[in-house]
Image 1 (cartoon, rainbow, N blue to C red):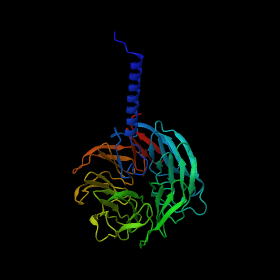
Image 2 (image 1 turned 90 degrees about the horizontal axis):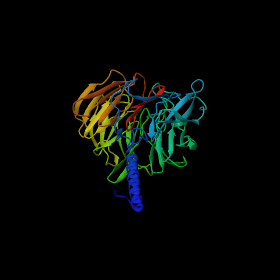
Image 3 (image 1 turned 120 degrees about the vertical axis):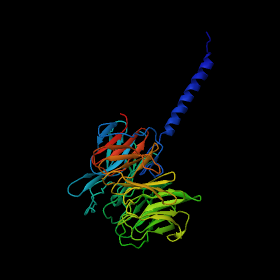
Image 4 (image 1 turned 30 degrees about the vertical axis):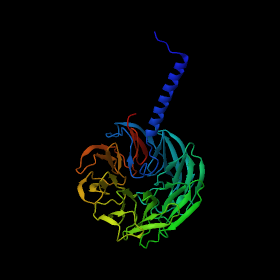
Length: 426
């Protein structure tokens, strides 16, 4: 019988330990989180594996957890923790604003922190499809940033929810707030498109102090909008793309200086986050009737008459949900449930079909090679992206909801009126 010397045994053990550790670290690195609104990259895509395709209110549900209060912020997921915001009713037309951390393994609330107390003065008028907690949190390096529009913005310790800093940026909202922040280096940037004098602002993410503030300078009848910026890179230089009422504007994220703008007339209450692919910015112009514009992103100044690659001015353009791009195909669902597939480079329409007869507010997500469209009554239509419509599954959760999905390996996280679901194997 061949024996192994102690020295060789030690080498073998060390090698096995190193290999096991390397594989473990590789698996950890491969697991993708959902750290902000619209996921990593902000465009609704996830590389998560084994994402559920079929479920119901009683089938393939890992857990269902009651979430106190009212809120439509999309949950974010980092590792084994979920972060979301909510507004707890406190008397007539008043709320306390909270951040929550939920265990992704079992749905138990780990901490619930009141970030801002009852608001002073007359509460802002709220649209029936909005809430005081509609902006999604954003995570970075052990910190969670929560945003409640004019009611305040805060940075919390992700482990225990303790406040690191908080501040309030004054402006006059219309129908509440909806846009989420974005992080660029040491800056936390968000739009403040209220009734009067709309602007975009950058705070120091470490202190909450203002770093820059830029007025929109767009002449329109209605100033209010609810968009989330998108950071892109064009010819080696970064741009922060931020739609507002009347125009989409590109800024230098470091200084807030305007790079270019493209007008879309009197469009207002713009909600959809912009998309970027094939050198084009895609934006929906909002109410009253939205039009879709694809704009070349390499311009300077006013590019309205020079850089619009194509437009789609039909009733099927969404006013609320953000479209999604998969390779060369552009997909969107309007507010009434009609989905459209187009050529992302030219705007040519390949197909258009009604998914359900319900209304839509949530934005679609792409994961596991499939696109998930979710309506307000809890029905999710799963399709295979292509030039012909191929429905893979239709799933009915039977609960009302306006929030978009969060996606991680093996799981979908769905927020409804009062609950948070983890769809996947228990």
